Image (spheres, rainbow, N blue to C red):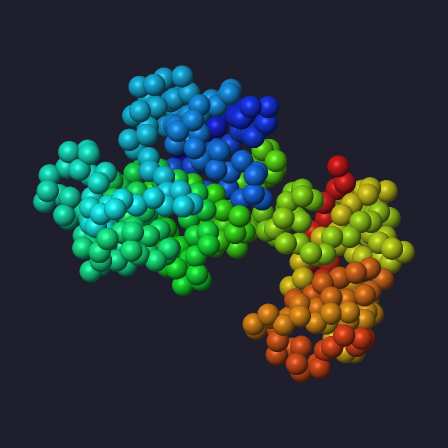
Length: 359
């Protein structure tokens, strides 16, 4: 069941068109992520969903009702929603009073407020902080206060605008756990904007990719990252190996692609003579010192141009008949004694290739 439906939505600030004909649907109870570069229109869409702005044109439906031109319905809907901004604002008051504020203005009784605030303090790991002034807290703690204040009314929809921007890794992990727990326990529909692609992958059931105000792709997170439908999406989600080629044959679902006068085999039903992009994620590439067995359809000699260590993983840049980037474990790199200038064999399976047509 779709709780939120956006139809042909446009928004403009002066002469700048920020959103260009967005149409999407968000299911009740799902975590839906909006990803895209800065300035893509993610925050604008959240403000429109929260009824903080009116669109230039288009419609927004909540639970089947068009709220676009009805002040009464807009107000009713806002009361069932809460939003947490990238830079949270807290009052110069105690943590308890900050979280209790939306309950007080809704007329809740003191005993009920105490019960709900206490529950929220525990959920956001701030138990014992209730008497602290909210403006003396760290960035991560302040964001948790803002989350608790938004969640305490048990909203039907929770909107999050870059909820972990500029926070340390421990705070990010804690806030992500809170978001998932709240969604699981309350069944709340969560719509979050983030430029952190791995965060979208970790948290979201589905992801929408926005670029320059346009909706490029909406799909389950696994498909967005593993089989992007557009070359711009592929580049944005970190597919570092994108090669341009021409299909020279297609038979029984196997295609042979000419890339720089070398043949790459992949799985696709595209036809011969079609120009395509060949996408290979770095982690799908295997390196070896000896020529691999015949089981690998794609194998090429190469020379290492760069070895970059990053924690347990190592990024390897290679000069093959075409440039490639591989991502392997630190242990494997050390065992093979990989370094710039060393010659290796590069292999990847036909099933590891994702093919996108030129547009």
